[in-house]
Amino acid sequence: MWRRVSFFLCIAGAWSFLLVSPLLAGDPCDPPNILWNCNFDEWVGSPPRQVPAGWTPFVLEGDLVFMKDMDTVFGAPSLRMWSDGGTFKAGIHTRVGNVQPGVAYKASLGWGAPNAPDAFGRQLGIDPTGGTDPRAPGVVWGSMHRGEGRIVNYPPGEGPNIDVSAVAQAETITLFILVDHNYSTGNNYIFLDAIAMFVDAAQPTATPVPPTATPGSGFGVQGSGLPSEDAEHRTPNTERRTPNADARGHADADSHGDGDGHGDSHRYADADGDADTDRNADPFADAHGHPRACPPAAAEGHAHISVRG
Image (cartoon, rainbow, N blue to C red; front, side, top):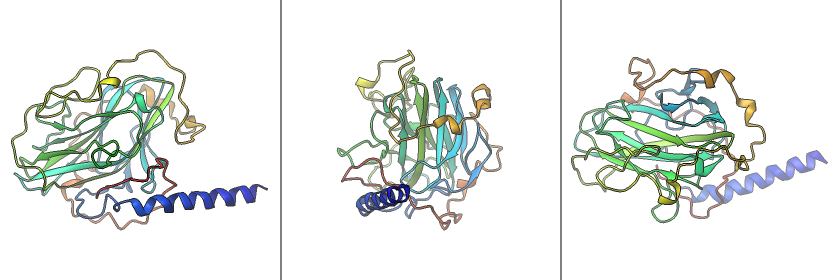
């Protein structure tokens, strides 16, 4: 009986992937992507500070666990950021070298999948001077998405898109992925994967305008008076809520837990001395030939998924 059920699930999963995969524009990590370890194939450290190689964790508020996990439609592994009952504003950054000053570069995140969508804001930022402080006034921040949507680089008007573009002012620039978990429903987590950067021929060259920080949310959109996230999601929620259903079907997230992670008060605002921090300073290092696990069936179910490389 169980063999028949298992066989049916395998067939169903395979058909689901086949229905979605032809609609993907291609692996985000294929050229013209210039990021090394775009698919998070290589890792350093251990929980609570286990991150993809070449990336450095930072924590602006609260505390959390960074760790390797399997949830992604782009081929495992993925980065899991999670906390059981706590809130946080945190992320990872990488420095990208051998870029051309005066040229616009765009960053695009393929997978940003939380188990409590309204409790997680997802945002990308670029420091065009190569600095590593996410609070620096020169960082160019894209819009923050808070709510449904695990794939966050749909074409405009077709779904969530948090792409950000900036004009390089030095031969090295810095890419930030920021997660704002502003209220808890219990054991909450988000999975990140498939982050690409490439030349943005559509953006005219311009000098960026300093951003404004919005307390309790993401950073303001560079060069405009727009808020960093949709108005309906901006009301703060501080009470502990009944946990939402796990959108990815994870019945026991605690199995990944590391109790030590919630007591770690270390901050990683700037870790340029880390041997792995600057691996993207040589974007032509070949890390794209690693064998990949077959992606699981996509959870989005959208017929118009477009992932840009």
